[in-house]
Length: 367
Image (cartoon, rainbow, N blue to C red; front, side, top):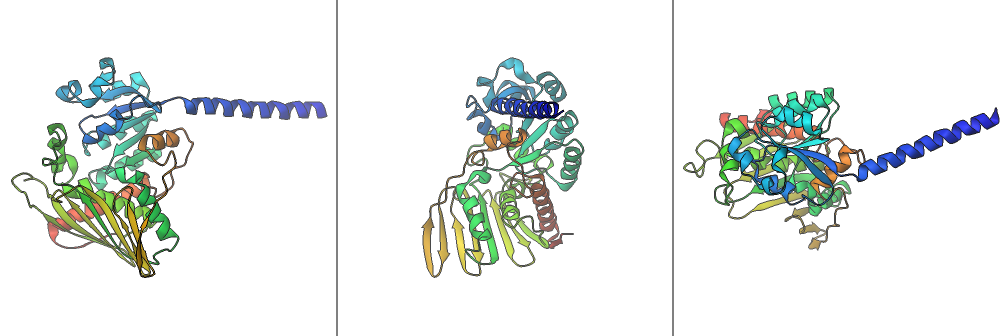
């Protein structure tokens, strides 16, 4: 009897080791990735990583015939892998995950196609153009147990992670104010292509203009830094500084997000004289200035000093390394991480409130 129990245990251990070996081998294989939509300028994130080895593009969907024939991926992906039908592409190529580079409006359709098939999704920021779309996407993701992630360039800035650590460790005391500046000279001014700007400047496809395009960054970072704390209210002013170029959407905005103990000020704009994604965090004992992805300063004890932020470790240093690790189960996406569904539902709620406030001139209280 003892020998039988020993053999049974040995057999169980062998099965566990075999399963671990199989999982390890699978996780080393490139991620089977499909692309839905190719009109977003951030498609270069995929193009620049093709051939790196962490993913293989198994299919590309684009509904527009002209764009499907002429896009940045055409030089890197065989023509036979381009599809005009999303469902057919998914059924014939069997991706593990789909990354969406279409309009914000199209994010919902991508999730509606992928979720029932058990295919994970990562969209470019923001998650959705309004809360109606966001709630539908949330329901589909939860019902079908898929990851629904949102990618932001600022998630991979060394300085943002260091700023969050400083806040969490009490280096500047209690937060009293945050100010986040995001934007550039304007999509036309910096040379964004027609495929991108045709929907970026259309409120029916993007939800708004600069508010949607750049307001999401600061809302996302703030939600992450304060661990999902809900704001009390949102007040916004939207400007049309270049109505001849952007007649349908605002090109500049100021958004005041009031929390129980501090104020967040978001300044998304297509009218900055330079590209910027910087942030000030003021506290009761000092302040942090995150100048860009690599440079930051800390003011504390009456002195301001440059801070050398530690380099982010893989897979937290790159959107596609992160995506592969999350899909394969090597890491767990925590609530209110920058890519998480919880964070980005709150981001869309803040943006929705900002758009409403800008129209009425009144603050919007959040439930």
